[in-house]
Amino acid sequence: MVALHEKQLRASEEKLAYTYVESPVGRLLLAGDDRGLWILGFADGRDPVRPADAWREARGPLAEAARQLDVYFRRELRAFDLALHPVGSEFQLSVWNALPTIPYGETLSYGELARRVGRPAAVRAVGAANGANPIAIVLPCHRVIGSDGKLVGYGGGLPNKVKLLALERGDLFV
Image 1: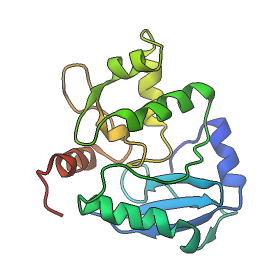
Image 2 (image 1 turned 120 degrees about the vertical axis):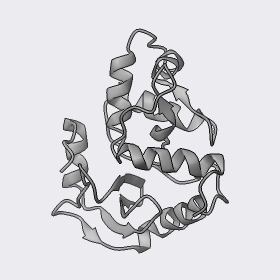
Image 3 (image 1 turned 90 degrees about the vertical axis):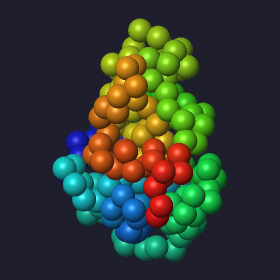
């Protein structure tokens, strides 16, 4: 199970709705409430995201997020339009808020992302915040790469990072 930051533990105590959706990158767990989507994580793999005991299975509150994901995976959606409620530190939120500014199909280095959030010397901290992103795909942490152009680190696994980037570049038929 994925380790959660202290503030993210609050999400596990909330009475969130959750559902699973199938995708070209595997089964995804979505969790949220009327404030927005709190979590979108990979339900399988090395560090699977699981629902907390307090959550209830209900697709209704997450139907729009599931619909937009489906359209995204058909390459018909380039930017998500969802209410989001990620839980994290002020620094993490600054990094996560910068992720949607990376254009669809493009990549950005961790160093450049650190510069964009006003912390050019905090490349490792930006990498850690990127890795703690609770709303994968919608907050496109898969678009962040190493300074040498190599694909490094991804909570959903590097093969899924490759698939997501290929999908956005039009190299992958889904």
